[in-house]
Image 1: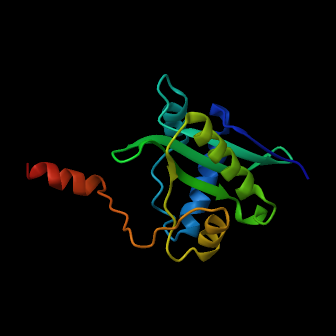
Image 2: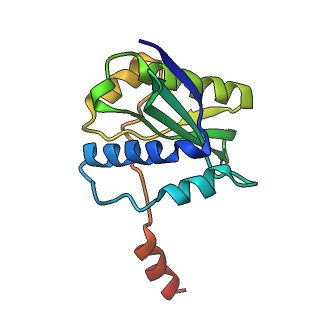
Length: 159
C-alpha cells in the first residue's frame, strides 16, 4: 500500500469536493456544502489562489485532503490556517491524517509563520486526541464566532 501526499491539481477538485461532502455528512451537516467543483478550481488555481490544498493518494485514489490559507494575527503576524483535514472514513487508521498534518506543518515552517491554527468540533474526541498527541493546544475556552451570508445581509441593512 503506497500513500503519497502531494499538492492538489485543478483536476483533483472533483475528488476534493467528494471528501468535503463526506466531512459535512460526518459533522451532521450534509446539506451545508455550497461550494462547487468549479468554485474550487477557480478559487484555488487562479492568479491569486484563495487556498492551498494537499491531497493524499492511496493506490492512485485520492483518500484525504488538507486545505490551508494564510491569515494575519494582530498579536503574532503571519499565520497559516488549516481549514480542514479530511480522510475518507474507509481509509482511516493508515497514518494518512499524520502525513497530511506533516505536509501542513512543513508548509507553515517554510512560510515562516508564527502559528498554525484550526478548529475542531468539541464532540470529535478522536480528532482532539490526534491533535493533542501531535503537540497541538486545543483551546477549549475559546468560542468560534461566525456571521453567515444572511447575517451579513441583515447587518448591512442596519448600517
